[in-house]
Each structure stands twice: as structure tokens, then as C-alpha cells.
Image: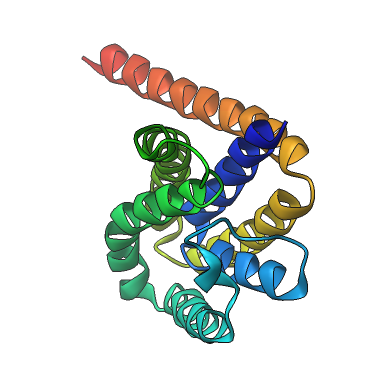
Length: 193
């Protein structure tokens, strides 16, 4: 059961990284300092006050930067590899008693993969927002993304299995909507030819 909880927690927090990279590590640091979550061996540093300060400052800078019109697109490009790396590290921190090859393989696939999927969806959404609203809708989108990352981080720590199931359902809906939009776009392109 510990393995299932670890995978669900890793996936939940990694997906939250796809919205905001530093919110999940900040939530983990707070959870570790308050005794709600215990970091695995080798990752105890997450539960230090130094980490709390660093993650707090990084979160503040990241969240604020998404409200600056030209900077939000630059951050989207930069955030993708950082979110994948952070998601991988977060998930790896859940499996410290595993063989290192298995630990980092699961972390890269489950953690890095879920962060990448969410990051790609947020990038597509931001591009759609920019093209349809001229960028005026981006602050609303940034607020939604930040709130979603906070909620996913809290739920992931408190209810990891529920959160992972909820994420799977939401990602399924999002992917099907993107697929439908792609089909409509292709169909309209074929019709105009």
C-alpha cells in the first residue's frame, strides 16, 4: 500500500508542478515541517526552514511573473523542462527504499510524465487564451493555474489516491477536448480546400 500511496502522491504533486513548478515543493516543505508528511531518506532537506524560505521565494517570484504579459510566455517555455525535472525529483522522493534504477525509472515515467502532460495542456491553453483574447485573458488563466496547483498540492498530500484518480479523469477529459478541437480544425481545413 505504501508503494501505491507513493505513486499517487508523486503523480498528484508532479501534475501540480505542471501548473506552477514551485507550489508543490513548498507544500511538501510545509507538510514536512508540520509533521503531516515525512520525507524519505536523502530528501530530509525538503523539511528544513531553509528549503521553506527558498520555495516560498521561488513560488512568489513564479506566481508574480505570470501576471507580466510578455514574461508569461517566456516562463511557459522555460517551465516545461523544469516542471518535468521537479516532477521526477518529487516522485523519486517518495520511493527511497527502492532499487535506484527502479526508483528513478518510476519517477521519470510517472512524475516527469504527469508534469509534462499538464505543462503541455497549460501551454496550449495559454496560447489559445492569447490568440482569442489578445492576452487579456491570461491573468485570469494565471490565477486559475495557481489555484489549481495549490489545491492539487494540498489534496495530493492529504488524499493522494483520490487526487490521482481525479487527475486521471480530468486529464482524460482535457485530452479528449484537445483531440476534438484538433479534429474540428482539420475538418474545417479540409472543407475550405
